[in-house]
Length: 236
Image (cartoon, rainbow, N blue to C red; front, side, top):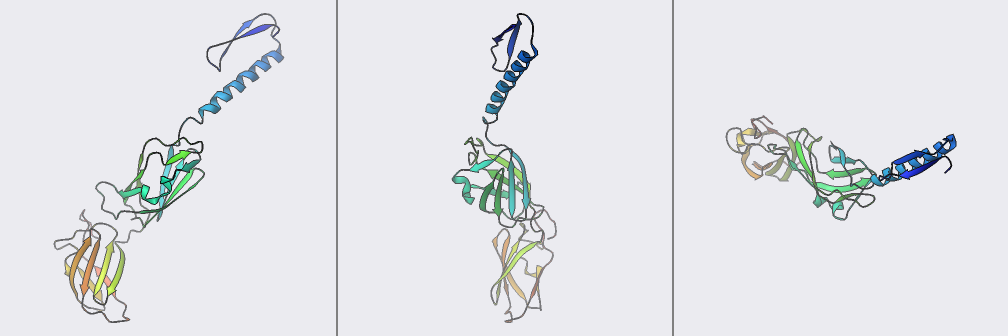
């Protein structure tokens, strides 16, 4: 090129100039253009050399939304709800949550869950290599996220009448079973209209079966639990 020579440097995005005469403004503009183009090619290649990175994780009553830094895709195993685990964090006493569905849209992966306990801390494990960038590059290691449940804070999640003398009660968190403040103490339960609670047995850490006197068909009863505490000693 008239007036000067370009000597390529070792790095692709740098050049060295040796002046051989007059610098024309059009020549300088052409050189700047070439440098810009070459830089953009290098930067463009760099953007596709890493897998997705999790940016935020939020909860609603029965959902978890995971937002990544780029559009993502799910591998075959990631679409299976059983690949995901969401359990109460160490020291917490809430009911475990089951992931029942998985979907993806652009940068967001949405997990559908059973009802979460409000305020409960959960540990969500994202399995390795189940989420990838659209170019196929995966997350290479498992990611663990601690989330706070956004579901119900009601102490008793459900009461089911099995028959005219049996009730199944499910708590939203693990409660004390034995002792004067335990759920196995029949005196901590009452029904209105008044019928006796005869005995209580434990089905699981959060589920109890109550045996009652004969219930009247068609009568609406109100079940009250009183004096029962969780494992931290907090009244339910």
